[in-house]
Length: 112
Length: 113
Image: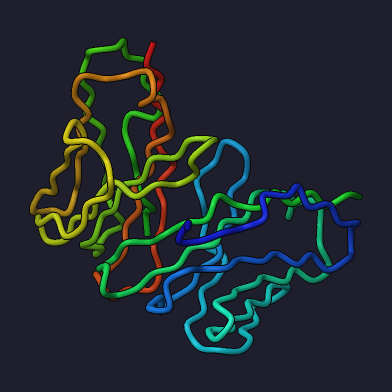
């Protein structure tokens, strides 16, 4: 079983819609959860992280964490064509030091 | 504040050769991690260094090695290159082991022919 699983997509949404990206993780010891965005040919950039159950909002982005269900999601409101990218979910547990475990990413396309 | 820098950005090597990649973390960051990214496998953790000590190592063969210097700069070395080593090699830095945020450099694109 993979540490972090994501639907590879592609996910297509129209401009202005809400994009919902999902991620599950296998180790209940995971403590911090991250969403990265990676444009084609570029390196991943951190969008936001969450470590407590519930929602965390940052601008148009909302991360949601449900530790009981081992589930993390990222909502992108008012999606823009510039949001078209691959979104990587990552988890970290301090017992593994600074090691991040990444999913393979979900490809998002926002259609103008 | 300058971001993570990696050199070189692109490399072409032949099978059997060795290669050294360099990473300079964000100023003040002491933890450097290395990842290999390929289309099929995604981002895979290679190793992590903190204060010149390797703290974690991923599931890669011994041909992959690294080190960190006293100024937190890090290098990774791959010996006896194989075709399957063709990948984007990413370095990420963070302030310390318990830091939440990890920032990636632009990567080194290695092609083995």
